[in-house]
Length: 362
Image (cartoon, rainbow, N blue to C red; front, side, top):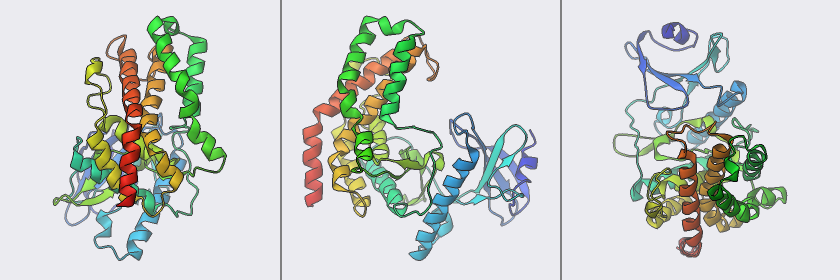
């Protein structure tokens, strides 16, 4: 593939010096475009339309979000704006992507002198909480109507229906296994409670907001002095409940082991990570968060291991067609792990409620 020809389809500045693979993303193929002289460098991406099938909706979301954030930063006379919000470059035909006949491409300016981080610590949990709440706060008044690049991504009612469909089809015969039946009982005993967000929304009690839907420290850029520059990886930005950004981070970050650890004795809920993340999140969300959203933050913390449990066991019953599995029982092991985590989080509800109440008084 002639990547230089792809780059030439965009209205970039400068002459291309080099193009090389860049970053460790799992969804899109990404390259760094280095230019000569004083022109900026760029990031070129091949968008995975198997995951994001509506490229126009996807890029419209991103353009609306980055444009709104830039206006907010300009209004606040924020210094160094170009390093604090992503900037995508249009193709020569004016679209925000280029189709080469087989693949879809986009390009953005590479933010200079920045670093990313990985891993979870008490300090980073606070930063992630505050940063993504600030991101939501900046988008609380966005006038555009954004779409869902992945439809029903965090819709618990839909995930339960997917599971019911998997059980009815029982393509693998695994729905009849005794342990699977036990896990399914735990799931359906909780299903009504864990679908309450959708009910509250229909009743007009719970708002949807523009959320990132992939909250992790890897999706934040820092300068070399560890100051936050901006949030990146905006493909999953969409209308959702704030539970998406709150609970999804804690599902992985506050699990004391990896999500497929077969040793359930290692699975527990790291309350220190919860406290740090929640403290940062409540600080950043103070301008918009409502009482019903605050009341349900413990619920959100349990919702995401529960939702992931439902997805893992459905895939196991379907014959492992979605998640990559290293061995036949991999999805079953993942399911046991997430069920244990769900129960650990549920047991911590009183502690979480007490901690949140303390933060609101502070």
